[in-house]
Length: 393
Image (cartoon, rainbow, N blue to C red):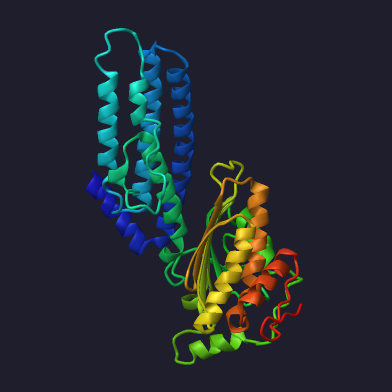
């Protein structure tokens, strides 16, 4: 049965990417619900076990069954999201479950001290997602599995854009705008407003996705000057790319894409030579909310690209993101914020994308980076380089 499910999922991923993405999103949302339930059950077990010297076997067993079901569903959802990956998870889950059942069995009294069993339930051993031990075989408790599955689920959703293949997704709609972003939107659940089902092109008023609207509000922020000391005609660039007969400048081949729902967004943006991914969940549960951001590449020289990354890092650090940079690549993440706070960060992130579009061609030194970070954080967005250490606004 498992092999049949795996084959079906792989077939959907390759031949029906739109269906696969919607299935992945539904699995992700189910996973988050089970994650919330699992944490609540662990809290109940902790209160029960640590609050008394001896507790009812029946009460502990009932709570543990709920935990086992919730964690089992999380694993099943992750395997559905990423068919063919994390296949060692069921084995790790079974091993931990066997250890817990062994501690629960053989109780001669209806009341017992279950503290020795909790090491297999609430202890968290997987602390650093970048450590080599952060893998299914490193899980030694149910809490470890919950942490691993949740972390990998967010990572896999962040990678959603790679599954949108050159505009061949049925139902993806082109966002019409005066701004030079050729963007297609795939609605997964409530991301687009009712009444646009039969349309191929829409405008932002037809988008209901909270995170998508917040990011777009920043991208088109009216006080951002989109001309600079080194002007660049993106439409001419598109014509140049298509001159070899590859595709027109409005072709889905070189487009940007967003998969959206009412409270979720994954957008992959192509701005000429650089590539941006923003993945965000913006709902009422702050424990599940997050933003992940990646930025790489550019049309300027290597120094210009690294200085732009330094500017991005300065702003994102100021916004309390966890930031990691390597050469001309930056990755950042923030989570556990309320809906309004996530919306606010996405708005500013949109402004940040707008002002940095050509910055790698215009920024020249570290002193300018520092000044421009300060200006951006103060809400002033018209940057022009004016010699070494110089600055104009």
